[in-house]
Image (cartoon, rainbow, N blue to C red; front, side, top):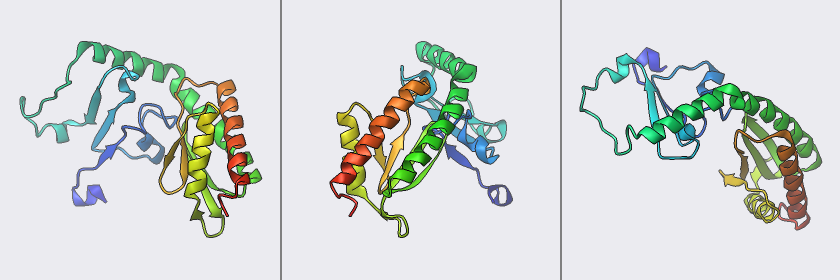
Length: 202
C-alpha cells in the first residue's frame, strides 16, 4: 500500500529489533523492507544512550549536511559498545533467541493446557505475551489476575511486565539459557496457580 501511494514506511524496532525475535529485525519475519527503521536501547547492550536510523539514500538523501544533529551522536565509547553488541547478536545470541523462544512457546502451550485462565500465548523469539482471560470463549480480560501473577512472580524472584489489558510480557535477556528459562517457567506457573486459587478470574 505504501509503495502504491508513495508513502514512506517507517517501522519502530526499538524493542523488537536487534535479535529479540530471533531475527535481526522483526520486519524480516513478514518479508517487509521498511524505508526507515528505527533501532536503539539494545544497540549498546544497555551501556549508553545510542540509537540508529536505518534507511536508504532515496529517503536520507533529502537531508543536507547540517540539517540534522543529535545530542548523543557519535559518542566513541557508545559506538564501540554498539559494534561489540552487534557482533554478539550475530555470533549466537540471535540464534539463541530463536531456539529458546520456540522452546518457551512450546512449554507455555503445555502450561496453557493446565490453566483455563490463559487465553492465548503468542510471540516470536524471546518476545512473548501470555494473555489472561476470565473466559476463553469471550476472551474477557482478567486484568486483576494478571497484575496479581506479576506481583507473585516478582516475590518469587521472577521479573515480568504487564502490557495491554491483561497480557504478561516475557522478554528475558538474549543471553538466557535453558536452565534459567526452566526456572522462570516453574516460578511463573506456581504464581499462576496461586493467583487462580484466590478466585481472581471469576
